[in-house]
Every structure is written in structure tokens, then in C-alpha cells.
Amino acid sequence: MAQRMVYELEQHAMELSAVELSQPLELVDAVLNQISRVWGLDTQGTLPKARIVRTLLLQRLQNDLRCCRLLAEKGYPMQAASLAAGVYECWVNIAAIVDEPAALRWLDHDKETASFGPIWDLTVGAATIFGKPEKAKFFYSQYQQLCMPKHLNPLVEKERGFRINVEEKEIQ
Image 1: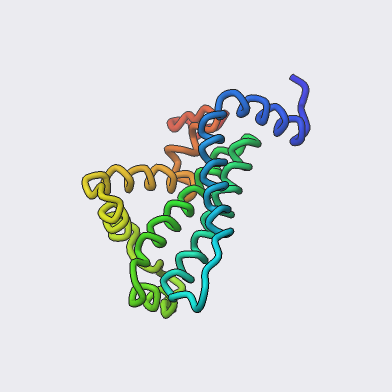
Image 2: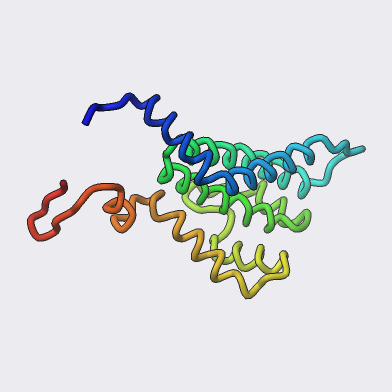
């Protein structure tokens, strides 16, 4: 089997994704376009801190989602999923900034080793805000799936086209 260059592999992946991922990619494009429309809204006067923080996070979400799209389209599903976990975290953080005190807590956050809040708690809050508190467990389980490639979980890694023989400690 002749080896193909990375560019050729990416081109092939893009051809496949144009067919196999057309609907999800169209949905991502619609979300990205909607976010761009939000940037086009004029706002008079001084913005409340909650709006500034949500806008800042929305910009991050837009950029990360765009990168996810590009990675998925070019055939890098593990990297896209890893970044999608960050998109999820961004979404639940945006949902948590419901008022000025929450924005101030976010702005005052100074812990390098901890997020703004536990992702489970932020998930429950986001699901509740969107009127779907019963979906929190489902949303969180989807997030956990996205975190598996992010943290190099062996259950995901060993399914990447290699055959692993545990007894012989061999990878083929």
C-alpha cells in the first residue's frame, strides 16, 4: 500500500466529510453565522459586566467551534472531540453568567487549577435555565464522552485502528 502525504489524506477526509458529515457541518455553520449576527448588534451606552463576560465567552465558543468544524472536516475526530469538550465547558459557563454578581465572580476567579465552577453544577444550571433540568444527566454524559479522547482514555485510544493484544502486551 502506497503511503499518502498528510495533505492527500486530509483532502480525502474532506471529500468523505462533505457527504458523511454534511448535516452536522451545516448545523455548525448555522450556529457560527448566528453568533456572527450577534456581533453585528449595536449596543448603546456602557455594557453590564454580565454581558461583557458572556460576549467574551461567546467569542471563545465561536472560535473553538470553528476549529472543531475544521478538525472534523479534515479527518481529525479525536482532536475535534477534545476541543468540543471545551465548547461544552464554554456553553455552561455562559449559562452561569446570569447576572452581575455571577459576572463579578467570574472576573474575580483567580485559581489556576480550578474552573469557574464544577462542570456538573454548571451543567445542572444550564439545563435548568433552558427549561430542561431533567436533561442535565444526559448533557453531562455527552460531555464525559467528549472528554475521553481529551484525556487519552484507553477505551477510545485503542479503537483508533490498532489491534491490541493485552495478554501478549502487543500492539499491531
